[in-house]
Amino acid sequence: MTSSIRKIFTMNIISSIIYIYVGIFINLYIWEAGQNISDVAWYNIVLFTGWSISYGCGTFLVHKLGMRKLITISALSVGLAFALLAWMPPFERIWWLASIALPVGLSWGLYSATQNISLTILGKDKDFSVYFAYSTLAGQILSMIVPIIYAQVILKFGYSASFIAMIVFVLIMMVYAKFLPHLPKENSALPSKETRKSKSLSPFGIFKQVGKQMLQPQYRWLTFSIFAAGIFLQFQNLFTLLFTFTVTQDKTLISLLNALYTLAGVVALLIYKRIKLTNMKWLWIGAGLLAFGFIIVTIPMPTPSAKSILLISSNIISAIGMLLFASTWNAITFNSIQFLNDQERTMFLVWREWLLCISRIVLLTIVLSLNDLSGWLFNLIIAFTVISLLAIPFTMNIATRRIDAK
Image (cartoon, rainbow, N blue to C red; front, side):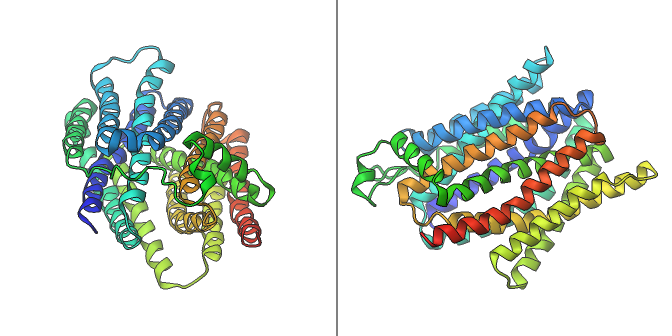
């Protein structure tokens, strides 16, 4: 990796510590306050609304403001959320949750956009494979270690101490942002060298152009697969946590279970690398395992212990399926947009992120009416998710054939 990419990688490790904590313990903190599924759903609705807004803004602003300023703004935003959690007493619940979720979403979306576009500008082809290989490895390690450490902090000193500890990491993130590379001025975050037509368009014009292209008949299936993926990804993200919180609220045990799910993903990665299959076959296998993991939680169990074992088994199977699914779905998606020029690919990332956020919010809106992890509505949500999940490899197969035939 070049020096610039190494600095981005180091920042990715620092930010991962913060966002891994956010993904587990803020959701757990909200769940413990009332064990209300709708509270967790509302928090995530506001979070992804903020994410979608800041991702779009970050894509357009990264070259104008630079990586250092945007990462600093991202750090300040998530730092505000931790400060509110540590020192602001809860008030009207719906507004209190929104006040926490919005800065988290703005931070996460802005960071994601800044990192993605900066890698595109500064990275070379050989850098990407090395960067993502090391990032995946670091992410797996941190996903096991960070929850265990912070579980102990919460048990010994309480949530407020952990929020203050995270503010320290936010300050580290802000300091290290000063050492991030400058983006070259002669480049643009939206490089325009492919076509004369693209040069004459503003970023917003290119955004609209790509949107119209994605709705054309030959690309409509790709758009549908992205929308369906958001529904499934949100179910996987939310209910993996809720299934674990239902089993136990012991922070150490939750952390150990999270480590177990991570190890299952590592096993899946080893299998994926050893067995040579096409991406489409792996996509079907991953979708099949995920669907099976979701469906089995609807099986009635005679005792709470048996139900707990079933929920943990579901999460393990889903973790294996998720690794296989995510690896191949992303590869197929990005291979499918090779026909776009550099500017259009950048705008495609914004469209993709917004479609994913919109479909996530659609599912979360349905979950708002859910009272517990059983009953007709829960089964309906699972059926809706499984249909969306199995539609993804089907629609991706059609999409790639139509795009290749173009």
